[in-house]
Length: 188
Image (cartoon, rainbow, N blue to C red):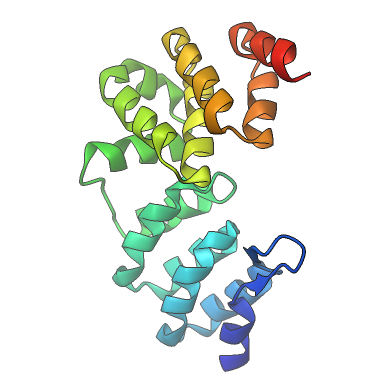
């Protein structure tokens, strides 16, 4: 088991100097199957790998101290379904408007998010303004999917100030002419 835990740790990418995870899913799966609670904290750290199997392993280990890390992992687009599964397995319910909005986004409940726009908008705009690329990309993708036209100007402003290539691609592929046209004229 110790070797699996060690193998969960990220490595430093020599080219970009960023920490990355390598092939976390099989290790997380094995740790979940073993069922040893010593794996909980390393798995909580490995949620940043954005691999869903990590959340599933935490659900199998059933240690409630994983809940805050899982709530934070709602921002990870690729593993959001597994994170929601794990949180529901723990019986978690949102304690704040922010957690409620992030849960609805993770469940892709765009209808409810539109219906509750007065709660949704400030939470996602706050995430959009954060300095965290994961949070603002998540917020931009969420706002695009909610499809509220009033937000287009804020999204373009964010892209122009500190957007990423991924964010620009999301705008271009959104299907919203009002988002994709300004990007085509500026970046393409």
